[in-house]
Each structure stands twice: as structure tokens, then as C-alpha cells.
Image 1 (cartoon, helix red, strand yellow):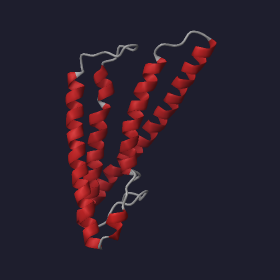
Image 2: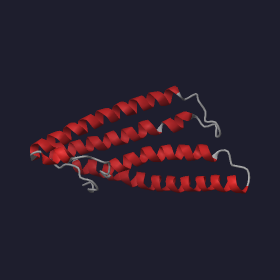
Image 3: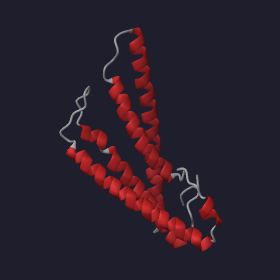
Image 4: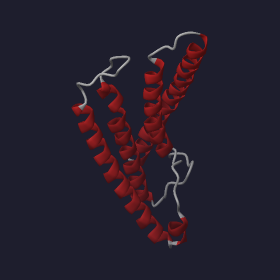
Length: 167
């Protein structure tokens, strides 16, 4: 079971990394176009909106990739000083809280996305639900990844470590 979860975990990272890289390249291109157009001629109107939407998407997807790679900041001073069993209990409790928070964030994000489905963006006239969709998608991904970490902890006792490859 853990090998199956590990394959899904790695697949999520394998999809997120190139998507984020492409998003960063697009963000650089759009901002460069915005700067050049403002200096050389009349500003291209849609570049500011596209840059904002790309930044929002990259932030949320980057958070999911950081979770997958165990790169979020953690202050483990107290937990690291606990006995081994207490460390596992504290880590499991933190993961349960994280899963609960991320599921509620996905729920609220989906609700908000649905509420704003009638609204269109100013320049591109895109439905804003496309922009808001990143919240439930990334929260769902992070909830899955946190639940996978919790399962790994409960079944093997292994605590996730920063930058540790997923088994």
C-alpha cells in the first residue's frame, strides 16, 4: 500500500514541477512584455491581469510541491527534544490538524469558486471561477500528500524530513 501511495506522491511531484517551471517562464515573459510595452509604446492591457493570475497559481501549486518535497518551514525544536514515541505522536497530531485544515480550505475554496462563477475578469473576460479553482485543487493535493505522510508515519513510524525523497 505504501509503495502505491509513494508512486502517486512521486507522480504529483512529477506533474507539478514542470507545470510550475512553465508557469515561471510564462510569468517572466508576461512581465517582460509588460515592461517593454510600457517603455517602448502603449502598455498591453492584459499583461497585468495575466501576471497576477500566474502568480496566484504559482503560489498555490508551489505550496503543494513544497509539501510533496517536505520543504515547508517547520520549527521542530520542541518535537526534536521529545522521546521517539512522543515525536511520532506530535507529528501525527500535526498531520491530522493539517489534513483537517486543508480539507476545510478545499471545501471553502470550492464554495467560493462556485459563488464567483458569474464574475468575469476585467481584461480577459475569463470566468473568475478558473482563477479561484486553484485554491481547492492545491488544498486537495496538499491534503492528499499530508494524509500520505500520516499513513507512512502510522505504518512505518518514519517521520517526514525536509528534502527526503518519497519512498
